[in-house]
Each structure stands twice: as C-alpha cells, then as structure tokens.
Length: 243
Length: 139
Ligand SMILES: Nc1ncnc2c1ncn2[C@@H]1O[C@H](COP(=O)(O)OP(=O)(O)O)[C@@H](O)[C@H]1O
Ligand SMILES: [Mg+2]
Ligand SMILES: [Zn+2]
Image (cartoon, rainbow over all chains, first blue to last red; front, top):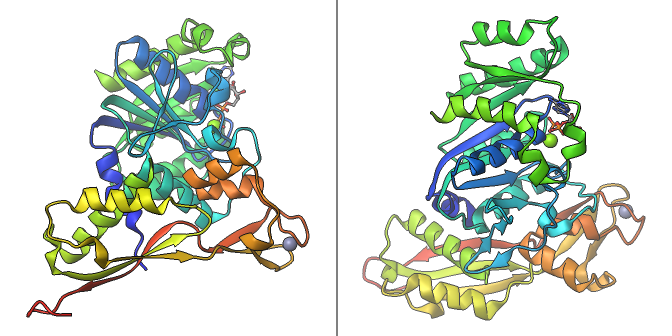
C-alpha cells in the first residue's frame, strides 16, 4: 500500500513564501492568541497571510478571530476560507464545528496528511501554523511533511513552562529545524528563566508580552483585536522576524 | 471537485515510484477508494484523465476498487461497517467526504456508544499496486 498524499503536499504550498510555526510544547501559554494576532498583524502590514490551525482537539483560532466560518469552497481541491480581511484560514473546525473530535495518533496523522494534500493555498507571503501543546503527531508530521519551516517558540515566564519549552527547543535543534526565536508571553518581571533559556540555547529573544487584561474582551472580534494592545505587542515581535 | 486533488496525488506518486513522467510503461495501477470518503468515481476518473493527458497512459489501466469501511471500537471491541450504521446527516457526510477523520465527531460505536474507535479500513484513497510493463512492452 502506498499513501498517495505525501507526494503533493510540497506542491500545495509551493506559492507560500514563509511558513511560521507557532509552538511551545506547553499548553495555555498563548500560542493560539499569538498565532491569530500574528496573522492579523501581518495582514495589517499588507502581507498576504494564511492561518492554519493544526490543533484539532483544541482548535481555537476561529473562536479568537470570531468570524462565522463555514465549509470551504471546493475547486480542484479545498480552498482556504477567506476571512473578510483577506486572511486565508484553514481549521478542522471548518468541517466539524464545535463537535468534540476524539482522535488517536494514526487518525491525527491521517487528518494532517489529508488536510495538507487537498488544501490548495494561494500565493502567500506568510502562513502561520498554530500547533497544539506537546511533541506529538502535529509537530513531528509537519516537520516530516514540510521542508521549509521556521519555528517561533512561546513560553510563559514560569519555570514550569520554560522547562517544557526547552525540550522542544532541544528536539528542533537536534533535527536542524530553524527557530526564529522565543517569545515570553504573560511575562512577569520577577523571572528571567526565558531570557536565560534564550542565552543557553542561542535563541533570539523576540520580546516580552505582558498580561493584557483587555485581551479577553477582544476575543471573538478580529476588528477589535487588530486595533488592541495585544496585537501591538505581537506586531513588534513579528517585525523582528520579517525584517 | 476535490477528487481532482486526490487524483493528482495518485499520479504524482506513481511518477515518483516509477521515476518517470512517461506513463506508457504502466501496465496496471490499482487504487483503493475507501467507502467512508465516498469519492465520486466519475470526478476522480476525470481527474486521472486530466493528470495523465499526453503522458502515454491508457485510462483503462487504472483499476478503481471500493474498499469497505470497517470500524473497531477501542472500548468494547465491536466491529461494524457503514451498512450496520444508522445514517449520518448530509452535512456530516460532506465533512467526512472532505476529511474522513470527521467521522470521529459524528459516529459512535453501535455497541456501547463510545466515540473511541479506529477506522480499520476503507478510509480514503490508497494505491494498492503499481505494475510496470516488462521491457518488450508486454504485460
Ligand atoms: N498576554 C496575554 N494577556 C492576557 N491573556 C492572555 C495572554 N496570552 C494568552 N492569554 C490568554 O490565555 C489563554 C490561553 O491562551 P491560548 O492562546 O489559548 O494558549 P495555547 O494556545 O498556548 O494553549 C487564553 O484565554 C488567552 O486569551
Ligand atoms: Mg492553542
Ligand atoms: Zn463499543
């Protein structure tokens, strides 16, 4: 048996200039708000931007952006859902909405393969990929299937987060996967674990994002989110990566 | 039609495996179409036709076989097929057509009601075999 899907994945992404993978290993550190905000920030800067939510069980980018999403168009393949600001969006939630999606490993790999093999991405300057926590199928499969990736690591200031992110950083370094740097999110002044880690692993320290109390009131409304303080912070992080 | 994207994947895999875009050397390619994904055979064949155009392959050499979908419950061990399953709705069928793993959002073990099951077979498109002609051009 030969799986035909692997051979076309690179082709589906051939018009995408840079693929930025937002990852952490740790959950709850802000990967999804960062990913969605990075897509908004790039969109505002005038770049053609795509957003791929690969967190099947915890998909949340559609909730953060809050535009009614629906089945994507079909034309020689599946076309990303176009948000009204022009961001090309793909998520398992386009297909299954808010239903629980209990997937085991092989099924997760199959879903990733299928999604990447049938989605035809238009020309994009940037594609942001939002990953679930952990170092499981999602991380390993995109590394296996897509050659040109750059990782952005997100950590909170806590030692608990930093220790887990270190494991991912070590894995990526070991596999020679480019890392743009690390972002300290929901930062507290009293800790320097993330900065220390950046030094220890020779990673760019891309910046500090404090706890932004008004962020919650912007969730579900990308127009508000894009003009808010959180996206301001994300925008200055992103500018360091793209310039 | 997203069948086209899958047909393209099949042809590009055949080309990778034979190391050539000249498809006249092909004797037979057997493709399994998983019952769960409910591929439109006509659309898929059109896709194959488009993708093989001018490459010397006869469409007849593509054998399309429907593979029955079988599910197995991880909780109670029961196995079932789509025939024993009460119908899923239109939208659900459509989601499963695009992404067969959507079945996990909509199907439950008919024995115990668990959502923890595996798709044992008949999921989507796979290539069962690629047979190349011998040097004299015969089978
Ligand atoms: N800098 C921040 N300020 C305020 N709330 C934040 C910040 N970063 C993340 N959050 C909140 O923390 C929660 C977890 O964020 P999320 O992006 O879902 O994390 P992850 O994707 O890493 O699991 C969300 O409710 C999000 O709004
Ligand atoms: Mg998330
Ligand atoms: Zn059962």
